[in-house]
Length: 181
Image (cartoon, rainbow, N blue to C red):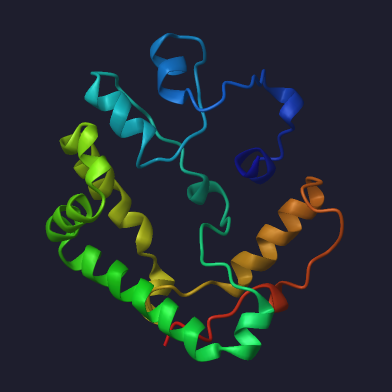
């Protein structure tokens, strides 16, 4: 939807169908020409099966806010040290993973033995493909974990204009960078 929004297109300009979480299979079986997925997941799977893949990154078309940590306002008010500790531990793990992805992958397999049930080389490639998404110009200048206020405002506007939000949201109250340093 964000790519459509950024290019002034409507969903009605396309033939859209629900395929569930079968993106790779739907593409491989020629059921769809394009599928929505994670750039570090389905393309890796498709390439591993010999499929040539072109990735259209939402971030190249629109600065949509991505995954983050969610915490209640009550916990922030009552136990800010717990929140700060959790954020700092998360950022340390992320930093360590970026600095030494092979070691992080090995540790993950030790901590999550069921991850060994699949194709570990494919999972290692998924991790490798994920690493660039954790960097940006702002995380370089502002610090890992930094959330861009302008991107929040643009995301809120997009979501409101596409009826994903019923009412305006005060984005300044919806996020904070307070705990990343």
